[in-house]
Length: 265
Image (cartoon, rainbow, N blue to C red; front, side, top):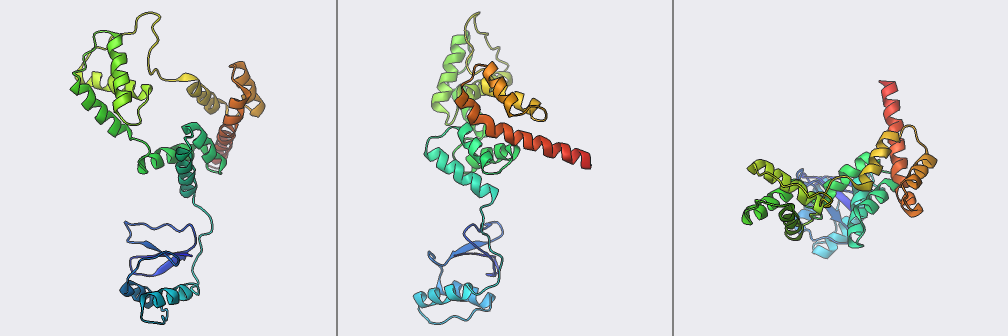
């Protein structure tokens, strides 16, 4: 059993999913794995009116485990939304899953789509699995400065995009393009346009962006059959429709809640 202990050594909660706040000086005592000193064990016992037996460390550990189990304190039996999302993301990254696949799993776990997207970004950055926009732009700026970026043709732009994707961690073509535009604007560099018929690199949008835009605009009116029909109209495979159906369902639920809140206001 895990126990949440505050800065005053008072045990305040127990359970597999308790979380500690380092800022508040909290920590978790695990009666299976612990490395607390004899002094700290005795301090916990004193703060919670527990009677310990023995003098040696092993004896005290065994005794405090029995005493802690008698405390009448709240038990955390279920994962918080943050814990659920964190586990899905860590497992997903380890398995090589895409962002979309992990987002769908987070939504399927019962978390709203709006919260899922916010939590996904936050957890990815906090766990060091995703570079923040600020850090990406700073790294890109250094690379562009080092190469004295001053494109004369769109081929120069494409070369810079490729270089950023290669050298700046967790950066795709779209993100590299945005960083280059910001750099060019700050340095007052005129960006050459792509030649007629030449495909632009890293252009925003794509089908997923179009699909999410349709979802947002139709969540309060279209049903699942309507979503499937729209996907078919856009020549998408049934597998893709099934993959994003949970996302659309989450948006529908969010739309209903927003309308209910508006009526109650």
